[in-house]
Length: 191
Image (cartoon, rainbow, N blue to C red):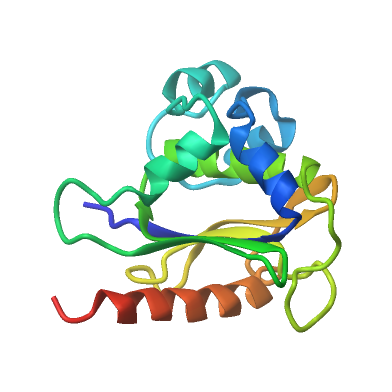
């Protein structure tokens, strides 16, 4: 039995652009050559993904906002795990974190599709953090709870572009994500 990975993302963009992104149709990752190249090197069970199988298997949501709402819904079984969907008006930064994301590459592909798309809405440089650059704007799906921090996928998100990162390049994002995951675990309290 595999255990769920955790999802963390942080993107600096105006509230207006975030609202437009959330209202936009959910993107089709089946035609994204970079997604297909990533999947060629990914380690997962089952038949290799193709554009057709991606379109068949990746759960369709009408809008990105529908997908985010689905992601933040508590699981119907097991122990409810906290998540966070916050926009910081002062820093103009959106943070999305899920302690109980998924162990399924179909869901990983959906997340990658959404966060590659947000680059087209990102209208502000920088991460809203201390560095003053875009180094921490990104998406991370990794095994914080169960897999010793193993990275399944990481993206760097800049204005107009989102690129896959290797684990070494993702280290600043991992450090930031670990702090958020630790806070989510603490907020769950004793079970």
